[in-house]
Length: 161
Image 1 (tube, helix red, strand yellow):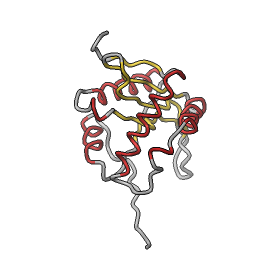
Image 2: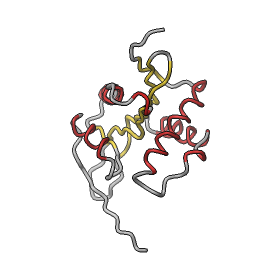
Image 3: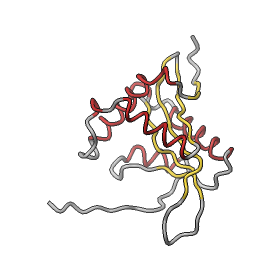
Image 4: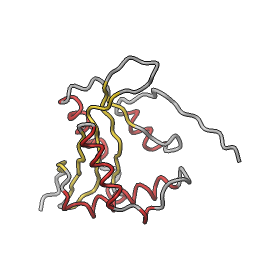
């Protein structure tokens, strides 16, 4: 069994492992945003949604494997149409999800998945790659900034209660 990092396409036989990673992300993001669906409610319906987005937007679900076990995943859509009414029409690539298992963080796996996402976007002739992040998630924002992402649009929110 190799300890080398390998990135490969998701297969349906890995659905339970994907759900576990998504649940871990949900639990982590709950500390930043209290309106997340509870992790235990994430199930196959969530994976079905990612797969539908992949079909609609020329996407890929990519798994990172280390030592024979999945340690992260990334979903990247390579042809997302811009639908802003006040902008010219164009397509962009979008990293809709990325998560690294807590036990595997700090080993460059997130960076490797982002490189893979960028390669997929370039292969699809995308001119831009976007990613979303919760404003309070400083760790992810720092990683994305080091990778070359810059803020594009900032959505602000004011609680009314």
